Image (cartoon, rainbow, N blue to C red):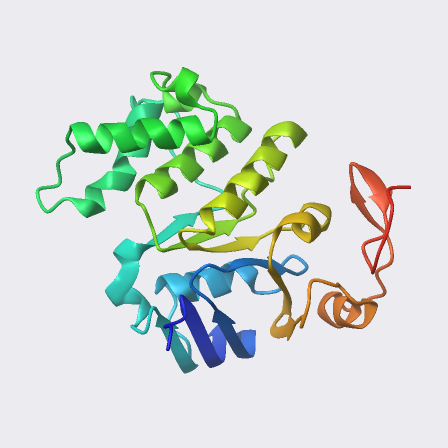
Length: 252
């Protein structure tokens, strides 16, 4: 029997006296390309932190490749939505990506093989031309691509991404969605996103989270499930141009 990439059973999380996750059960298979939707404050980022082992649930069980999250941290890559840092710190783009290799070396040093992997990851996100640029000189979209490259340099078995295309222009954003689809052949991908139009074209499985988890038996986003997750009727969403996302639709 194949061990799932991640599995949550009856998970509850309370933060500052407020229930953030309520009885969440979820299975992510080894090559799944999984999208998590939901309104702001619905618990999506918290769920990612549970998978990372950064938040321990009050109740329930969490397993990543059959083990507790803390035992497999080196096998899980993570791209945060925001990364505060000192923009004056003198570090180059290439060195930031190489940081993804440090966990794979007992000595904490990087060698020629690590540099080759970092270069390949920069090329995959179309950032090889800025490899020597100071990280503080990047735009928000460029920084996001560097963070994706750093996570890929880790060569994870499970990749978690929190709004990875929020700062990217449309062309780069579409390329990144396609990249994740290709990567799912080698690893499991979990993406938190509001870009429902892109999700409907690329991912394999979708769930909506608003404290409780609403799973979809197929890729069709029904009005009943969306309204249960968002707490209000949803009929039209914007993706380039406003268009319906419930059932078969055309760009209006």
